[in-house]
Length: 96
Image 1 (spheres, rainbow, N blue to C red):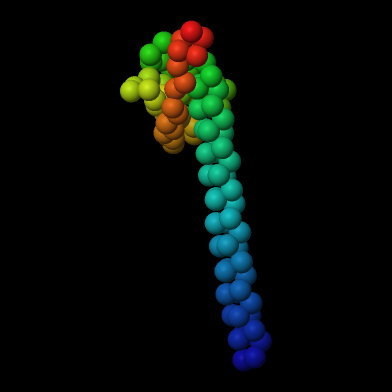
Image 2 (cartoon, one colour):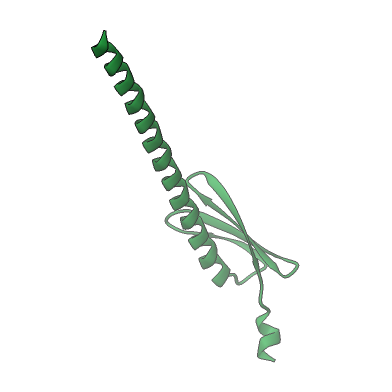
């Protein structure tokens, strides 16, 4: 009877530990995906030639649009879409 009780307690502890490890791995993967999306958004921010467009990268793709002094960037990575908003510094005003 004691052995059965110890096996049940060990099984519960093992199940809890494995669930925590799985959750941590999932969180890590989502964080890594978000950082990839942010890096793509930063690359997109430095590149826009037109008022709107789309860029493709090996890890995902981005769509951008200039609107009211802001650059709205939507990045798609692994089927998820991340939205970023950057303020635009007007280069023409700084050059004059």
